[in-house]
Image (spheres, rainbow, N blue to C red):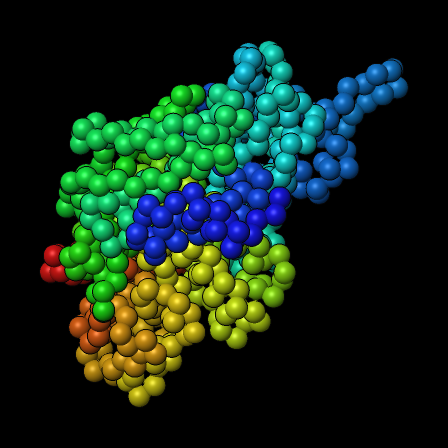
Length: 616
């Protein structure tokens, strides 16, 4: 399949037949559709979105497993489940009689033998299915960390790389009446050319970590849609609908019952329909997280979504939400339930984390450093929390590897595809703490930024940087990526990794992009909850008092920052990280949390909570 952008635009302009005058908006739609087509071409396993609204059969629950620390399962061809044919035959593997693991869930927290395991685990699920004539069937995974090879009834149906985004395979004609077996080889080994790479500061939870579903559709179904406000508009929807199937040319109806709104359009031969309509929307905001029931219908399919409408933009040195300045009161969150000491995936897990963020006074959560589960994004939106969605392009990335830019693009497409209709998502963050001297880093991330803007121009784009210099009380903030970002996002750890050099109130700032809003995306220091022994002015004792003083100094320093549009402490809860090896104070945890893994609020929590109250 060869796709050429100029031909695609020319063809679609011809279909417009001069009916639409907003040329720039039309081009945005055209390029978004082109990126959609290209993404499908590059990644054949691209997942159907809005799974919750579809006809599904859950494959969650207990799965049989084989632990394969030597990686010999490929040689033994575990997926074939060979049986002895003669008296002298035998097999050296079996799912029968072995352990079972809960799906969704990481394997590390479910078996003590796998607590620190990085390697291969084979999963097996037997399911019964009644095949219906004229129906299509897809096997959908919310996420598998990190590599997944998927087999159905002994046949390989595909592979996927990436631990935090959904994927699927069509199994129409492959699934049998009655009993079927799906086997998944899961490997969470760190890869030099992986995303993330070999070095990162969080726990490497492996396994089938999110929901697994069978999706049944008609021959032609609603594969995808974008229904959000047009850029810089408060009352105009500009989007599209994409059908999949042999009857791709159909009438489409979009209905919002609460607005008594009914919009009709027709798809073209490729299954695309352009969408544009106006209404008097009650806009979504943290103070009023208004969501509407949106129905998308064609003759052969019917979907319901819950969608909010809002605008987000940068104007001068301010961020505007619904054309009003907003100060981002954020907190960083890792996808870990601290009380279960396991990967977070459920709505209940999300509420544990997000309720704490709301209590702190946040209006934004930075979901670091990878796309969190769809349950987390949707629950944040319902609770009135803006969302910072981030790719796992974190330090140590091998940008010079020819495969890495391709992997980044696939993950970007998967993240945007899943979350594009979530109005709570206001930022696509494309990298964190990468370094300008890394070969091909600048070129690869410049190109990724362009592709992101083409895919979705309605949200802000960010690259988070920690390369600023500090000399003579002046912070020199620079990086080539800031030229391509909508805001200047800075990770700074004054008082922890870098000592204060004079009074925080005396700090001066020099920006390479002085016209842009500034967001402090990380700051803080470590403390063991309840530890008040030793001097509170020495970092080596890991006291709550030392961490508290860092936060007091940071709050004082914030007043010196021009164009400050928000702050985001690192981070909400203490979380597991194997690189944290101080066995007295850390014991395998990053202790920068405002709350311990046992739910104890540290003194710094109250400093941050008061700061957010003062910045209403």
